[in-house]
Image (tube, rainbow, N blue to C red; front, top):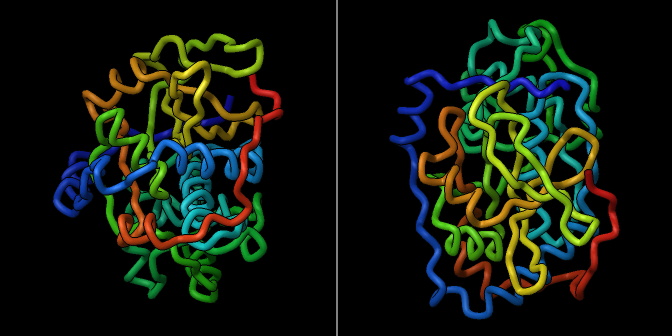
Length: 288
């Protein structure tokens, strides 16, 4: 199965440690976060697209998926961002020599793309829409990538803060306030079925190839919260229980890395935004 994810260099780890700045969400700042999380998650489960990657572009897919979720929260409209641009651009951010190799990218390259853009060619932080850089129109030469990238309309990534993955309770609150978790893990973990319907993490993998996914939401089953982990293997999202998350979070999703990505002024947004398309939704998508 195609999914290659690169282990970051020491310099990539260090750079994001230096630039990290994210406030740990506090329950007292987000009154009623459980209800807000239920509503926001229902919207995402109804509107997010399923994907099947055909290259080693899992990190690009995760970058786009997270951007779609944050954009939906902040703007109130679901749009489709370009996975292939996110992948090609992440290659370029790592090194122009990586463009066209299709050997995967690091988690850190995606975060840098969303927070810094590509300043050496004048491309601002964020992603373009899928309509501007369709899936599969992958550039194999850096010069051609630069030519296309300079003419793009780049949309806001809604990442004003990035930092370490927080505790379980703080992660749930962050999701209710429009945040996402950009994470890399060894693949494949073991899964079990919940309610004969949901594919749920049962055992973390500790070796093998890496895979990038995005924590975008959470759902409650029989009074227990599970993180919704959006995947790009064409078989739907996965659920992650608290114990599995905490095992990863203790080591910050090493060796690949994991980052909490938050929009600007999250507390103010939380208290001032209007949820459009609200209500509840019981997901009916098949998951494997």
